[in-house]
Length: 328
Image (cartoon, rainbow, N blue to C red; front, side):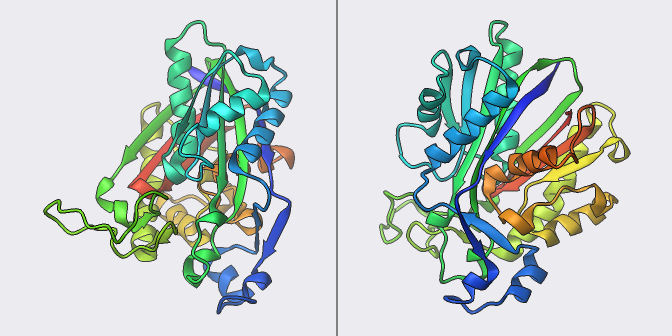
């Protein structure tokens, strides 16, 4: 049992931030950013909260799917930038789109969020014979947690949202989800209600003591090492379950973290970069939203077509990673 992606939607914040804009307040330049990351510009949420961006993407996905939102059985919102500790973004989105019969909850798997979300939605569809549709929304406002004094990380991130309506299908499908919590300290941001100066006598040193309050912090070298191994592993583990090879895949759609990560992982897989959909140049790293945003981009420009086999591969904080092989 697989899934069919009935429709997808996207919301892009109004404000565009170019590499040249960063030159005004941090020691960097356009060439340095482009050659090291592949990014030229990114969108930055201004007045738009996470729930608003997610709602707009969801409305578009439902419209393109041509369904009645009241027939949606579950709304899963993947995000690390919720506007509230509670309620969930999913509950607000559920109300805003009129999915009044759906359960709703948020899922935090960082940049692997959409992969985790789609696979979770599939499991609901598999086990509930009365559930007709599932909605997976990824919405991120990372700019609100970026440390703009850190030139190595602030240039990477962008904001945006994308969503997918899915249903049960007999199309091929396979997934592999994983996590390595031993690397949790390599990419993280503190909760708004936890101060780093608070000492906890737990018998060991707080591994996150080096971080700034509420800012997204990362160990670039460790993240690079993890990601370049996680990307090929996630695909291979998912593909081998159903006897699919890299040659069967029309498009690899990875998390859009850094072009160097994608290039290195592609070499390890033995796959040409021509088979990778990359939108880093326009949107930067939008965490859980990066894969579905790239999918919408590829659908709208005619690159991604029905019947093609694709691989969605995520990796991020946790450290989480995972892959899905499916037929679009």
